[in-house]
Length: 493
Image (cartoon, rainbow, N blue to C red; front, side):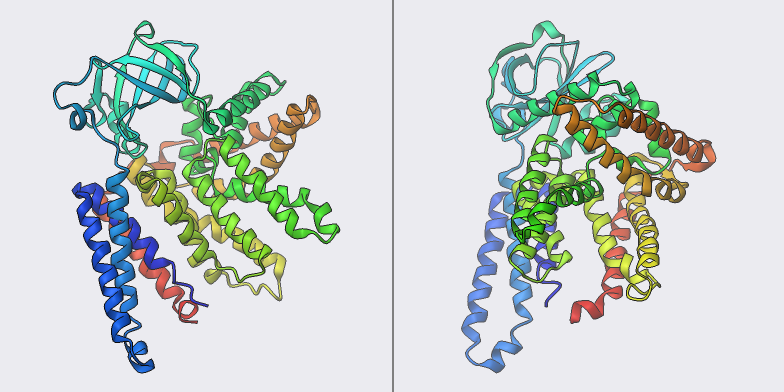
């Protein structure tokens, strides 16, 4: 079985997107490369007139595939690139613009609106305003006099977050008084409908007898809504190297997938296990849609989908193919995801786990299965943390030194807390609050927060350093080369 068949397309697709974004290339660059690749393929097929020639020319198939997907990446980035107002209107920018609210964060000073500007191919503006009664999906009009480009915003917070904002398509920021924002209607879409369901579930969590910090934490790890977390809590988890548990990721999706499969045991008992996997997929995709379809959760769900489909169709499984295909699907539909830190961390961590975790495990799975799994969990924590640390340093200028004990502490706690949180939330939606489970969740969150705060307290446990981008790029190349060396025998098999 070829384990690298999808590696070249995935890598070159990402390279094409990156080159096109940095150099701001025109669409014809991508079209030219695609035409060149197809011409090369036709030439190779024309020269392959006998079996000997076919074998001799086989290696050139990698070349035209690489050129093809590089061109697709360039064309994809160009066609899906958000347009700037200057590029559309020149100097004659309208005094008011129309847009759809795609997200709302409630802060102490008021609301922060994320608005997709109409007619800009997805460009967004982040509007800071007072308290409003607006909702996700509302169509609003707003003045442009107070708008400024993210790259030119000199405020400390925006300047630090500028790369991440631009990666999400947010090209502008503005502070606009509430009275200058007018609502003109509401957009009806599946995304907005799922958002309304998420809001209703969050309201039930907020109205429960959970302590407010526990409720906010549950909304973050279950619903992907981190707006309720205060800065002190975020800082505690960040300094402990466990900030990843605050965002929906492969860890959360894996635990939820296990829970859903366990609930499908009646199908397995009746000999209809394939129906159980199919129903589990439907539930997981519904959950991803309700929680906002973040890049990391979509990536995890796509990989789970490929794995379940392989089981249903009784085909061989390759986790490398699943990861590469998931990345390609996400990037084709949303090339800006390549520059999203959540997507980058998700891919780097999963790829590192695939490449190193099993290879470094000295325990025999056949002779000592339990000890093997314990060692595998510890190695997974070390590998994922080591792989993501340079990215954390580059984006957040912090290197948490206590990441290992903090993550080892979270290893058994987070799955238990997630399972309990899911059960508690489902019962809330059914109209019943399980008070005892709520008290256990309060105690569990309090334990996690205090333990993480104890391990991360003190300036000596966190190093403030931002790794330069060239060093980060070199690190990624070395990581890829090391992964290739570690797995060369498997790749050649």
